[in-house]
Amino acid sequence: MTDTGTRAFRGLRLGGFAAMALAMAGQGATAETLDSALARAYAGNPTLNAQRAGQRANDENVPRALAGYRPTVSASASVGVSHVSGKLGAAALAEGGAGAIGRASEQTLVPGTAGLSVSQTLFNGFRTDNQTRQAESQVLGGRETLRNTEMTTLFSAAQAYMSVLADTATLELNRNNVEVLEEQLRQTRDRFNVGEVTRTDVAQAEARLAGARAQVSLAEANLRTSIATYRQVIGVEPRQLAPGRPIDRFVPGTLTAAVEIGLVEHPAILSALHSVDAAEAQVKIAESSLYPTVSVTGNAAQVFDQQIANTRFFQGSIVGQLTVPLYQGGAEYAQIRQAKEQVGQARLQAELTRDQVRAGIVTAWGALEAAKARVIASQAQVQANEVALNGVREEARVGQRTTLDVLNAQQELLSARVSLIAAQRDRVIGSYQVVQTVGRLTTRFIAVPVAQYSAKQHYDQVKDLWYGVRTPDGR
Image (cartoon, rainbow, N blue to C red; front, top):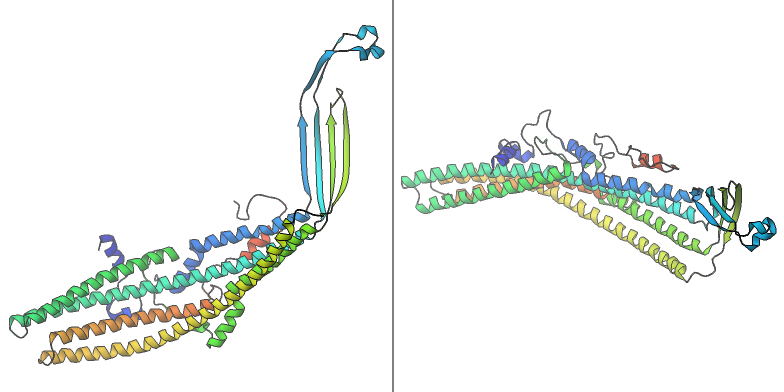
């Protein structure tokens, strides 16, 4: 390992067989807990923050839709120079007399206008009503998608946390195994030198030691990967990690109860149902193209120097307009049919999401139950292998067992301890996964101590804004 990697692993090492408790060294006041790691991920995970930014952008669809209720006002102004020069012809004779014929005429004007126009839609086939309803459904669906992203992020953080603990413990076990095998090889060589064992016994011990060193290298690589994932999800390097605990108090009592909760509360299902509402609103929006529209427009303008120099006049008008669509080529009918098919698609997608949630709950529940059983079985396996190893060593001392028997017993104990670590990790992760699949793995529900992000706060800040280009956070 490099010096940097050695220092990183040194900070993660476990003492003795505390590894099987999945606890990192130095669990003092400064130790990172699983809850604090989840809080870090909740506050700083880039995927989650990007989803929050997307939801804030999604909120702006509501004031955009509400703009259809409001008037549009525009001001215009123009100015220019107009120069006319020439001679008066015969037409000027009646007014100017014979002396006017051929006289040069020259005039310079500065024509200009300044005007104001106000337009208000009075009726547009309920298009604005349905666009607002659609935007609100999209906002509500986006909030559920954000909640789903939060759950995914927290679960990924729990996985990363427990993986670092488990891989650290596995690495320490493998390092300890190398130390044991080094001592075993030394003793075997000593016995070979005095003729108690053969060269075959020495070779077997050397082979096991080489394999153990290879396992250490593999464990180090796995731990590097887990550390990188931890840094990606949680945002900091893991140093001193406290033991991870399952959240069984938040797990429903039965599988049936878990399924019932998930089908009602899971954000993926709720988001799909809001998508159905938005699709139904789109049908109404498309149908509005068949309705008449009524609007009124008012104009006021001040006009200068249009035909005669130094003249001005004011003009104003109020015009009501009724537009009745008769036939527009058939595109509007196709849009209506298309929107209706999309409603059917959205409903089917909602059913598919329900099935996926149900399947996810059943799978997670089974994995948790299996992990619980594996922990109990692995603990019994470790205890039995410890007894067996001690017995084989004693028998080997009196010549009733071979060196290979001792090596095999040590390998079985190591495998049992590694299996116990994996089972303990899966036991914790399994509880988080069940809570996630039922739709409750949020910082609020599992009481993670962190400042809560409120998507509604931004929505309330922007939904009724008539003007302004600054976002509520000042950008």
